[in-house]
Each structure stands twice: as C-alpha cells, then as structure tokens.
Image 1 (cartoon, rainbow, N blue to C red):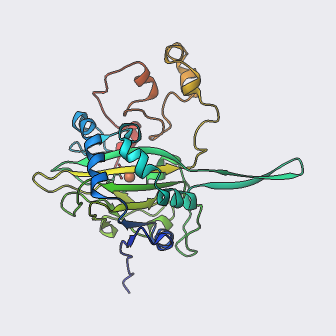
Image 2 (cartoon, helix red, strand yellow):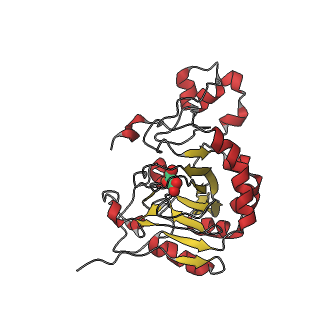
Amino acid sequence: MAIKQPQIQRIDRAHQEAIIQAIIQDGCCIIQNFTDVETVQKVNAEAKPYLDADKPWKGELFPPETRRCANLAGRSQTARENWLVDPLVRALTAKFVDKTTSNFYGETKHTYTSEAVCTIAMTFDIGPGAKAQRLHRDDKNYHVDHEDQTATGYRVGSDVEMAFMVPGVKTTVDNGATLAIPGSHLWGGDRAPLLHEARPATMEVTDCWVMLGGLYHAGGANVTEAERRIVHGMFFTRGFYRQEENAYLANRPEEVLKWSPAAQKVMGFELSSPNIGFVEFQTPLQYLRGEEAHEFGDFDPSQEKD
Ligand SMILES: O=C(O)CCC(=O)C(=O)O
Ligand SMILES: [Fe+2]
C-alpha cells in the first residue's frame, strides 16, 4: 500500500490556528498574504548591495552560484522593523520555540519563560546553474537529538528552532524553490531523507515559508538561464542558547586579540561545530583580526563529506 505523502499546505495569515495545526502536523506550511509587494521590494533593495558584493562559497554548504546577505537584521531596516517583529511571527515562535520551566528557590516555586531570539537572518540568492543543496535539518547546529514521533504525533516544545523565509521573487521549481519533506520533523535521527520524498515550496511574492528546525529541506537547483531566486530568511532559537555572560560586549577587540588561543577558544571566539557563532562567514577571531574574507568555505570540514 502506498503511503500518502502530505502536501505543503497554503494558509492565509488571518488563520493563525490553522497555521499552528499545519506546523504541528507537517512541520511547515506556506503563509499567504504574509506581507505586501512594496515591503518585499524595499527589502530586496536593502539586501542587493551585499548580495552583489558576496563571493562564491568554496565548500559544500552552498553551490558557488549562490550569493548571501548575512546580518540581514542589521542591514535591512525594513526586514527588521516589519517581518522580524511581525505579531504572527512572534505568536508562532512563542508557541514553538519559547521555553518555560519551573524551579524551587528554597520552598518557593519560580516559573521562567525564555523567549525566542533571532539566531540568523540572511538572504539566499540562488543563481542560474546552481545545484540543489543536500536535504538537511537546520537544527543540526544545535545538536538536537530527534526522537521518532511518527507514531505518537508531534510534541510541541521538541524543536529548538523555527524558520521564516520570505521570497523576494516568485519562486518556481525551475528557479530553485526550497525543497522540503512535510512530516519529516517527526522522524528519528537515524532516518535519512530521500530526494523523491521532497516537495517544492513554490511561493508568490507576499507569501512566507515557515518550518521547524527539525524539518528536512534544501535550497533547490536553479535550472533557468537568467533568473535569480531570492529568499529572505529569518531563523529563531531559544533565548538561552548563548553564553550566560556576554564576553563579546564586555571585552574590547584589542584586548581579546592579546589572549592565548586556548582562552580565546574557551571564551567563544572560535565556532561551535558546525556553524554557531560566525560573523560575516568568518570566525570571531578572523573578523577581529580584520582578515580579508576571500576564502569562503565550510566552517567544519567534516560537513563536506557526502
Ligand atoms: O535557499 C533556500 O531555499 C534554503 C537555504 C537553506 O536551507 C540553508 O542554507 O540552510
Ligand atoms: Fe537550511
């Protein structure tokens, strides 16, 4: 008997409860009427100088035809002050990413909620001729142990990351629409994703793709002659997935550069494998030294093995 594969649902932003149910069931959906054309055009224009200045990647994370705009939150006022703080985005991250726990201080019970923060905001501009990315879970960076939830159904709170991707152009199967496997957020860590299980999340300008960090997906191949596929991504994680004391603000760069390599590393100025803590596609130390970012490559070479 053929197992029915779920399709990607398309739901208007007015139907928040239906969006939540789709994410619980499929791990993803397309939010229709998320934004308007004028706002998308402004974000495209704000990201463009950085996309134009970006260089080909030399590792396996991205095909060389892809250009990126890192630090989109800092560089696009429009993305930051409209999408990043959108009440629907906040409602969804509150539901799926925020974490509340209770503890005793003496005999008194205290309950705290750590709210979601933006972990990365980046534009992905896939150029003609680019191969598809490999299917992956973005939460690999947070070392999540995925239990098999296919029989039990999804436990809200079992993901630590959530992504929102707003297309800057209409995305199609040919220009590299994001590929995703609906339902794969429920899979245990030992199940490999197969390309034939993936569906293209084709979107109109004003739509928004939302997915959990445990959903298998990939940037698609761009087989067009001349179309660039631009998508603005905003990713959220738990607010406590960072160091308790903020050494990056407490210490001046010239002081940090005088520390021993072991001290720099233990204070977080290297990366956590595979990808956590980069700045402008460099380690914090490379960035502080002012190294030229000409050799873009995978942060952890073990990512290159297929
Ligand atoms: O470009 C896309 O559609 C997805 C990019 C992506 O999944 C990634 O870089 O982690
Ligand atoms: Fe991804």
